[in-house]
Image (cartoon, rainbow, N blue to C red; front, side):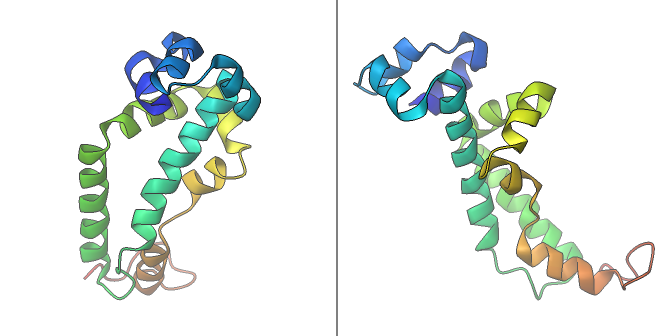
Length: 140
């Protein structure tokens, strides 16, 4: 529910009272577990990034040609955004506002998750780009 509220209203428009009402809990309980609205938003971001990373990590692309692997990753990302429209709305704040990027980068789950490449893609890229070269020798 918090994800939906942040997606609908943005960080500044979201109200902890509304989140508490939608989750049938109390504002006090949210503050007890999360510490505040900022920490709740970070938890939402962490969950959003972890979900897409987990899906990508389970994608068997390590042995595909780089172009095919990239196509599979693009399809996964597109499908994920279609199925989780709130992810794009929620993560947009993290991408567009420098203060949130700094804050979420310090998160033990969110920062590394955002920066981390999909493991299979790294293997494909290493095959396409020989050590010491400036770019791929073959993308097929």
